Image (cartoon, rainbow, N blue to C red; front, side, top):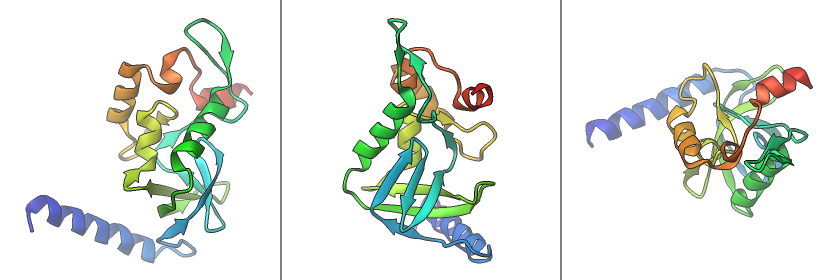
Length: 162
């Protein structure tokens, strides 16, 4: 076993050990997912907020490069729904937020769903989150994908004003 594999195995073991001592947190959830919005899904009856990112709310609009409003919040949710499709989603829960949602990292078909959302431009990397996907956000911005295809207000700022 090489050093990178050993570190990965040890890292996963530490995550599971930390979760095992957190009261009320299930270390694994899997099954079909129902998309609520661009960063919230329901798996196995639990509402999950995807860790390390912030997607536009359903009612949020953005501006296209043609200077037209478009429903970017609904588009982010639709992109997530389409990407997941009928595939089962597996999630590792980290903690709970103030709204009692489980904060989770999820995978679908072998892909990190959280990173995928940011790299496709449907969510922004969370400021101040450990491992909050800054490289994926940079790639989305350079490629002008999703929100980066025009102008938008950061979801956090949009919520503050609305």
